[in-house]
Structure formats: structure tokens, C-alpha cells
Image (cartoon, rainbow, N blue to C red; front, side, top):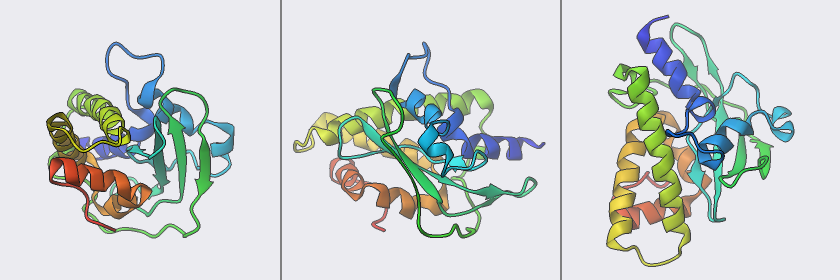
Length: 198
């Protein structure tokens, strides 16, 4: 397996396989994402071989949504649109919701990953993933504070989006936006950049 394929595999499994920051917390977002796929309600609608997205903050404090999408092939993996999603709570416990999406998955066109991601070694990829987990939780807390963005919020939103933009799957940006348009518009208002409106 080439480095490119290995890192692609790591990327599309990132939501389920990402390591938590050191020292590893007992709970938190990373643990909630890792545990979602194995929950009884989710096993009925999520195939084990599907890839997990990065988590997106929801308007309910402490809750995040992940979608799952098929990846097929080995030499040149083909990504498809999402087939299911789960809502997790960073405080722990089983997913609050797990549902199949009504539309049948459709194959997407490459490129799948932002420039430079496939050149990361395992340690660099894991470090970026851990940092993005922490920034996602911080951005969620600021978004759910329901206040005009402060200078600290602006710096946080900018840093969060820069790292998200450097790691998230390129053809799935519309699906990320649709999980919670309100969050992405908060990111735009606070930090100046965000996902395009879907």
C-alpha cells in the first residue's frame, strides 16, 4: 500500500479512528465520535466500511453531527455522497440520533483531499486531527454562547476554519454546510471566511 493510499485511508476513517490529544481524555468529542459507529442504533444504518466526516457543532450545546459516506476501491478510492449521520454529545453516552439519509449515495469526482494532506506522515496527521478536535469544541462553545462575536471569537473562528479547510473532504463541503448553516454563518461573521452557502 503506497503512502498516498495509506493516508487517504487514514483521512476517510479520521472521524472514527482519530486519537485524542495527549493525555487522552476520558470523554470529549474525540471519544464520542469514535464510539458512535458501534452504538446499537447506528449499527443498523451505518456500514462499518463507510468513512466518517469531521464533526460539525449543532445549535444544542455540546452536540455535534457526523455523516458517513461510502468509499470504494483500493488503488484509486472513489468517494460517494453521505448515506447516514449520527448526533453525538461531547459529554459522553450513546449517540442522541442515528439516521439513514433518504438519497442514494452518488459517486463524486476527485480530487477528494485538500492539497498537502496526503503528504503528511502519520504523526503530523494525528497532531492536526487532535488540534482540530480541540478547535471544534471551542468554536462550538463560542457559537452556542449566542453573543456578538468578540475579538477572541474572531481569532478562534479564523483558526478553526483554516484548519478545517486544510483537512475536510473537498467534494463534501455542501453536505458539511447543510448539517448546520447557522454554525457556518457564525464562522463567517466571526472570522471572515466559511463554507459557501449550499
